[in-house]
Length: 399
Image 1 (cartoon, one colour):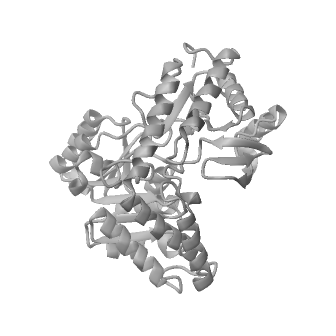
Image 2 (cartoon, rainbow, N blue to C red):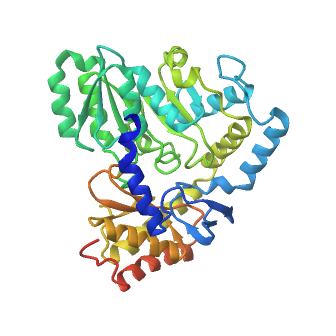
């Protein structure tokens, strides 16, 4: 029957209910700050929100959203091509383009739509897309719709990418390479210098998803491409407003004037209502704060290093280098679930990631830091992990 394919998920959800484990879709009843809330009746430190700069609770962003709602209403009720193009959308696009130092920008209603829609449109039948094997679901969704030949290269492996470009021969000139700045599950950073060199060598085009690196990397917070010094080699940058900018929505920016023509070919842009005025206003204000207050980025990295160093000192299986995303890996499913529950019971909310969402067969407890976390909160998170070891739920050698 049509719905039989969902039986495995139904069984998994039933198991979670039996365990009273609410790691997925936990309900937040109250937000106390950018870093604390009441989740499923328990006051917790929010350590899994991607709120990297803490701007979702910034009074300046909230006031901008309030004023825009009073002026423009709660929604646009139409797409950008119909009645949904407001002057505020154009202003945000101009500010995004200026921030990235390029000439052109498109805004979308969600980050998923931005990435999926752009990847679905730039390449088509007869073209090739080379994407990192650990790419986000939105990228996979987009390239599947594109009609292009899709080839995966090993995660963050320039040598494997080079091999596949060589095999394409003349077709490399009709190839779009796709990479992410920071990969969302493990927090590792793409080797964009090497990828950009290959892009230039073979005459391909390069798209970088800066969803988790905007506001996090680079001297001006523009992302991994800026940090690697290769912005001139990146043809398209996509990203989201839902992380460092604390709202919802997405964007694509480019140095290529053709982006203005691409705009009218992206289904995810044409056939959906435009971003609401409140979101556009809060995003504009957040972008200004990101640009003008680099100390937020510095504080984020202080917190990230503090957490990473603390968890590594406990002997837990963290990544090879500090990042605002600090994931602890578990080979054992039962241990990961039990550890998530104890963390929650001890007042720390993190993300439990299970295959196939994790980039391997392992299970993750994914922590994300914010500039708004205090040193005391970070130490409490580390202490909660220490309690896991003391309780025998995980040992350093088995984590």
